[in-house]
Image (cartoon, rainbow, N blue to C red; front, side, top):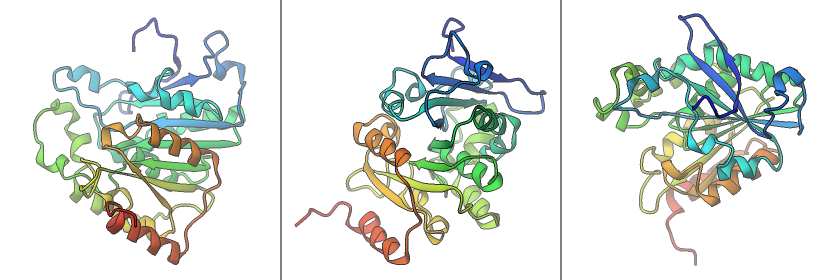
Length: 288
């Protein structure tokens, strides 16, 4: 981020052995009185936006620093829409380690702890793509951290085949992060994990899909709403959008705001079966 942009509200300086991360407050603008010093909040709810992979094939140094994605910025439609109901924050992290490492480094834990100390009653994590996996791993491993809701958007819980296919086109320093998105890696992580989602944390999967395609152009449907989450009754909702428009398309933004506001409950077996029919078989069929 350019040094003239007064958005960085906290930088979690850590030893070289840990991952560089940053936390920005993107709404409201608290430049005059930074929230982490003033201890003030405008809303009862805080939303923390967590991004996924961002490739820099020609600028490897950018991979080593936290970076804000365009949909996390204050003027994005997503932030402006979410700001009606919440104070909005953006999280950034260097993409030089496997994504499984990110939730266990001090940065994300400290970010959530700061929000909790300020007094937010609801702390909602919204993770796009790999950011959804990071958010899920965080709430599974730190159920008492204070997060009240997790919204996954177009998230490769079981990986994306493109991570296995593409071996070039990104800096070598980013290879551990990209390769951790391969289906074989993600499936093994799911199979070996013994940590179910805490009943104290509400969760939903926003599934993105393109017509006549079994996915959003990058992540298949079964990866966005995997069987292990279905068995826990985690609900899902369908948005017709590509992977890259998931945080920018108007229907997706409206749905994300709605999910951030409303109470989420686990689904019954009957509700799960109905959703499976709609999401995996009937989504493209014309309505009669």
